[in-house]
Amino acid sequence: RGEALASISFVANLTVTTMTRGATHALKASYCDGALDGGGARPCAGNPGTTITVENLFYNVPTRRKALKSPGEEFAKVLEVVQRYASSRTDVAFTCRKHGEARPSLHCAVTPHRIDRLRAIYGSHVARELTPMTLSGSDSATDKGTGDSYDDSYDDDRAAEFTVDALVSTAGYHSRRTTFILFINHRLVECAPLRRACEAVYSAILPKAEKPFAYVSLELPPHTLDVNVHPTKREVAFLRQDEVVERVQRALERRLVEANGSRTFAVGAVAGTEVAEALMLGDGGGSQRSARQSLLPGASRPTTMGGTRGRDERDDGDDAARRDGGLEQALEQTGRNKRSKPLTAREKAGGE
Image 1 (tube, rainbow, N blue to C red):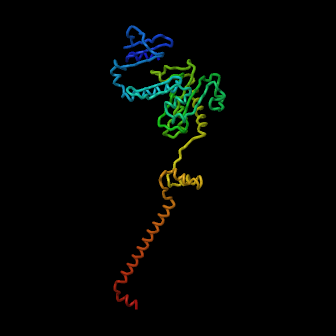
Image 2 (image 1 turned 120 degrees about the horizontal axis):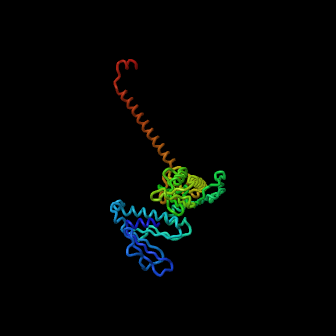
Image 3 (image 1 turned 90 degrees about the horizontal axis):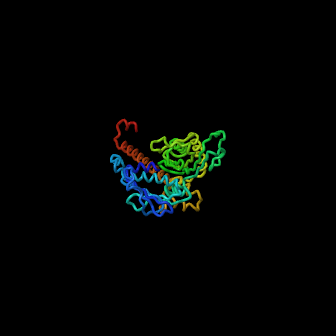
């Protein structure tokens, strides 16, 4: 944006090289301390397009320069912003490479499908758990992409005009971090009420530690949008915001219910347990060997619980026998000790 370039020209060395299609040469302009150097733009060789170079950032503001974090942390922030814009503009190729590295951290070719772009940026494990969701404020009878009837009594003559094109994660998505990418009229912004509404929907279907992924593109009439509610214009507000947020939330709930009809779970079992025995016997005797081998390839089948229980019972019986035998020996020894004592005169008289 023009105002951002003007601000950057006051705290860095800014160079802009641009060439229009069909021009004989390019033009190059350099800025220092907000002023144009060299008496204006100079002709130079170039390719069609525009190249913006920013060097020596905060060279004249040492206090701000000291506040910068490590190059790795700053690059991570830059990469996140580029990734989000690459998610929106599928008609533009993006490349982001850290200084000094030969391999780019981000490389996205032009693609007609947004799901392919998200797969290139965030990986296949994210793309395969995404489901599309579309919604239009002008559709008072049916929500696009869901096929569910919408309550006509909710809308009136002043219903908000908007369109939503989104890709949201299903219940099978697993992540410890929430990723919420919001574009309003093709501009990367934040809307706290909309984010909280979406998180409230996912909190009812996801485990406590799991977080969702959502890409939402919201189109609104320009005259209903206020971009000056935040000093850095990071957040925006718009007319009939509560209505739009509620309708998006209800559409998300219906979409997740539909997508929740089929889910895939990875089932595992510990060898020697009842679950493992059930898995081995589930397909009949013919597949018992293959099921046993699928649990622990190359390992022998451990002793079953029944065999262990029998062995424990036998051990208990041996201990009882040893205890009984020891008791009998103690009683016999006691009897021998009693018999070994000499008889008294009264015992002799009683015996007679």
